[in-house]
Image (cartoon, rainbow, N blue to C red; front, side, top):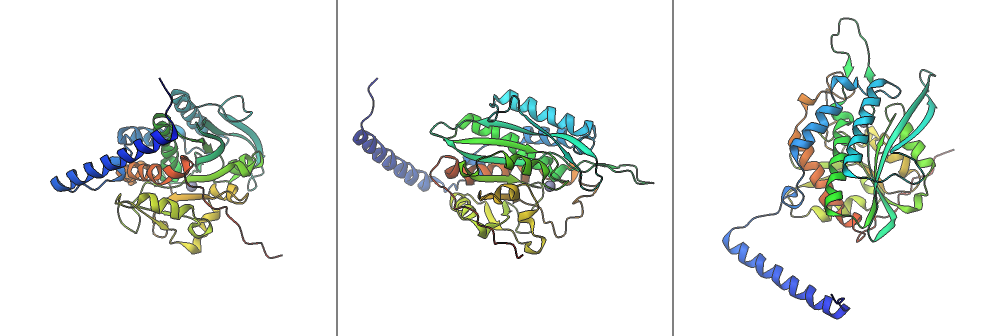
Length: 338
Ligand SMILES: [Zn+2]
């Protein structure tokens, strides 16, 4: 087979474009069908459900860092990474980045692991996009007279981990130009411990974007087919996503809960502090959410369709970043007053 010259390529591209316009005109005549995030990227909602129900099951005992419950969740994520054929990150010898830390509140020494898998980029493998969510939650808290004391953390953040597993499966299928690092962080609830530890070991200049998923299981106050992004004004990451979602019926809004300071309250902050345009996607109306950090954060309160559509929207919205066409501006944090 001969290789294509540049001119040939340009010619074929033109023909291709004309063909697309023609097909577009014909199909418009018959029926106006708008694309949706579902028609662009199909994520299997049954699998979304399976991931979610497994991670939020009572067997995982609320996934508190340092417990047998979170260990079961770690094993589930590892098994999924293995099934998808993800590679090992950097100098690690497995999907685990294990470390010891001291819980600031209880002073106990805890050994825990971030679970990290990689899809190496085809064209721009030195440039990394990290896709993350925390897999830990609050564990079991015994209160007298309360039967269910397992904090299942279905929305917070089994929904987000479900997202990274589904996105890993999606990008494994469709391919990626930039390298994708999928990270399930531990001990977020104890103070962004896992992501901070991860951040210490990286060359941040190689990380072109951070996509963090947090509580994506409930319909936002903006209505169905929407999500919001923390730190929207801190880089042009959000604008790139909005551009890519135009015409899909799915919309991304800036975080409407400024007073909650959410940009610094999830794992995206650990990388944003290093300059990485790293933001958190969420759908939850956190100002009125009765289940946030409550024992009632159960799978029954979540909408599988919302999770599935949001994962699809994240895939569609970040596509030009993952392909290397767009590179968001770096995050510059205001200097702290001394
Ligand atoms: Zn969370």
